[in-house]
Image (tube, rainbow, N blue to C red; front, top):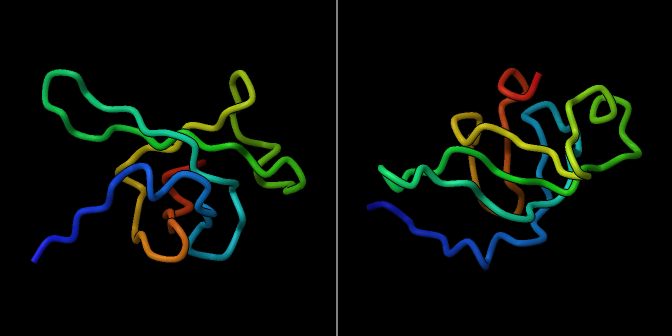
Length: 84
């Protein structure tokens, strides 16, 4: 059975990579207007992390492809390969 999560429940959740790097906190999501599928997660980046500082941050936000999402539970877990 598929478990649905309301985006509002995700706001503020910590986003980490599979190897434990704290990327930041979930702010919003982008969707494809035609298909309705999620395309990206928008994060408030953890600017204290050296790995995060190397990523492309636009207007104070970090965009992560939805295809990199591995799990959503207490944390949102992202495959690090999809973020580089």
